[in-house]
Length: 187
Image (cartoon, rainbow, N blue to C red; front, side):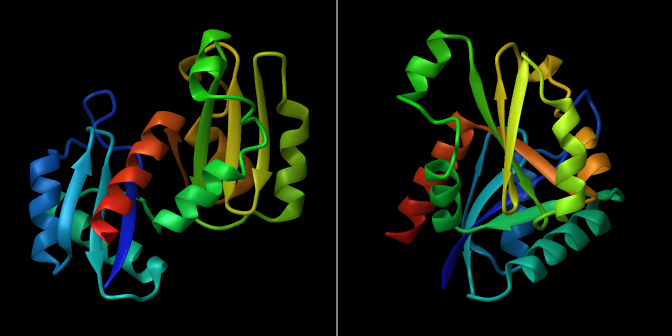
């Protein structure tokens, strides 16, 4: 068995695509996933399943959600090791999370369905500003917001339009919590 973290894109936002976390847990368990745990209402689930292709698991979860709810939900599946690597690889991670927050800067992780084409990454160069900065490393877009993510131009929709890949974003505290949950399931 392997541990996976499923990141659902765009659920429970502005009263749209509503999925209760207890219903999500039940759905994932009905698919044969084990040790299912969810975290906050934005669509995060940790589970164990037979080791295999993460993309296939993401597609299975997305298809089950479509069947049950009647709407499309993008899903990206990561391992705890991948979340840890994303945290360690953040080019904006200087000092502790608390120290960054005292300055008002916030770090976000946009997990991409796959690494974007280099030409697509180049199109983003014109969009860095004093309010936001970003770096793309593999299949993660690191975003540093000096104001707030709600005012950032680096939304999922913006990234998807420019990079031509699905994106789902989590703040650093959520990524850390999901990593902790994933490690606990591994034990």
